[in-house]
Image (cartoon, rainbow, N blue to C red; front, side, top):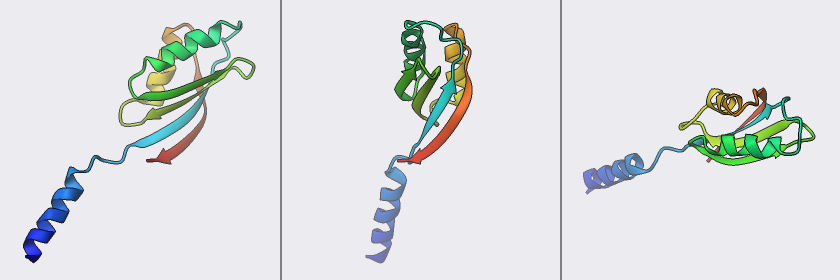
Length: 98
């Protein structure tokens, strides 16, 4: 009985998905010079696998991105904006475990 209980508990623990760490980063995007620029930056970031949310602020020239750090990285995010014509750099990072 004890052995089957331990087996059941271990099976349950190992069958649960690993807890993915969601990260929130703010990227500085100084090249946004018109009101249409944020649309392009947001679209580029949303296409990156693992990105769940993007908020772009034209006035502050930045973009806040929430993403799964097991699927993508800050480097991939900055590369996406650069490929869209808007080079960016890391401004701020927040980590959140879910």
